[in-house]
Image (cartoon, rainbow, N blue to C red; front, top):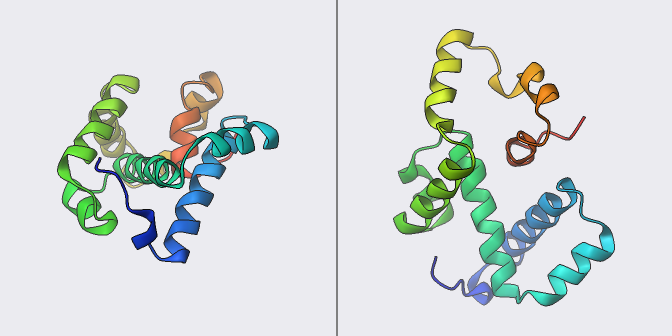
Amino acid sequence: MAKVVYRSLTEHSSSTIRKELIHALQECGGTRKGIEFLLGLLTESEIIMLGRRIQIARRLLLHESQAEIQIGLHVGQTTIEGVEKWLQKKLPGYRRNFYVAKKKSRGKDLSADHTLRQRYPTEFLLISLLLGHSKK
């Protein structure tokens, strides 16, 4: 991902990206002091870059096409492929598994697969975080 010129972003989009990153850190169990410490170490450009990667990962998990993500977030193909490779490494077969589950569920909400989430809460923390579900 090329360095983001955060000054070119609108105040609203910059604030939204920053809030998404903070929310992700909170969901991962970060304390207020820890989050403030980390944000203090990062430059504004790095904060925006991490926040945008979280947005890309969330959209990939929601099975948006790469073209839609490129247009919606104004990011390059290489960036999306990098995030997708990372997801594939951490969650092998996430796309294939989603397709099979969708076919079996016939329209049910797949984000509500509580049995697996309760059995393997740590493994599903990232998915829950990216899809916007709170820990239970």
